[in-house]
Figure: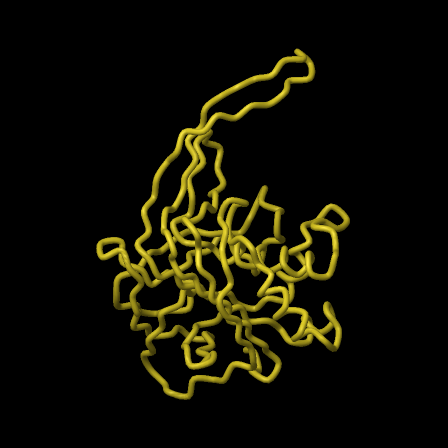
Length: 256
């Protein structure tokens, strides 16, 4: 169990322009998108901003530059407010076959989530000592500056504007029993859940290095969102044992 004085949170509010694409893995030629961004996408977006701010390469020693940030990350809790609509666009792709010295062409279906002006919110909880070791004594200034420099959350076309960033130390939520949350959490955090939601299989960043997805560990992320009403919801949750319930700037999140 974590001690809250050893944790540090970053809360980022951003607005999408047209929507986003976060491709799922798989052998199919068609590339579908996650309906809601998984934790690895948020870590990658922040890491890109961090490395751009600090003028560091996107890769180091064959690993993604996001890997050091992943190791410092304890939890990522996400909320998207907006009417989300999934579409598949047929796009033309091409590649060069060196042996034949010919250009090859094909058409593939690419998934896109249309959500004009949708608001995204991400709460990222870090191990403070790891963050300080990575960024030095001025880690707060550096990580906040990096959050404001985020330009996309998803594929390169998934453009966002960051509207607000807040930070601090989370507090233990003192009340026992059921809690209400509007942010995503791992399915293992809950004994019982009441409310409309989406449960999505995503890469478990806690056990899988960023970019090393040949044999990833998977987890189920619960998103408070109604597919029928096309809007975010608030879930009533009975936390499971060993789940940490935190108050993060007035919002309740579940951490495991």
